[in-house]
Length: 186
Image: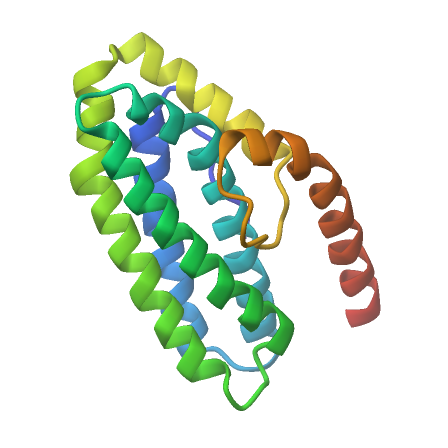
């Protein structure tokens, strides 16, 4: 699943749209079988990984500057770390594993709660703190971060500095692993 690119949207609209895409992938994954299930799961892993990288590099640093932003960001980072751990376990298990569905339900609950918290606590702070031009520039920066982001979860890498230092090598390894997996599935 390729995410739609809309160059006119601001960072909040971009991330809210991706939240919808993530929800759709969860719905599809719960009923899919065979190759569709595998492909949908890989799409979900990739989208969650790049989405969180963009938030960690672009959104969280901006929200920290807003009133009450520090506490909000710390809570979101804790949620992201927990979700990344579950996602990493699922990534290792694969969608055909016996324990997959129970872990997937756990992940979905965590991701949906996290998205709701962002939409209610973080995104309003962005809109209050920054004008439309800045929010659109942030969307461009988020898309750039996603273009070079790791495509698999890396629990423990949740800050902008960690992403900038460790993200590029992890992205190279992830993308190589994705390519190898794709070749082996043919």
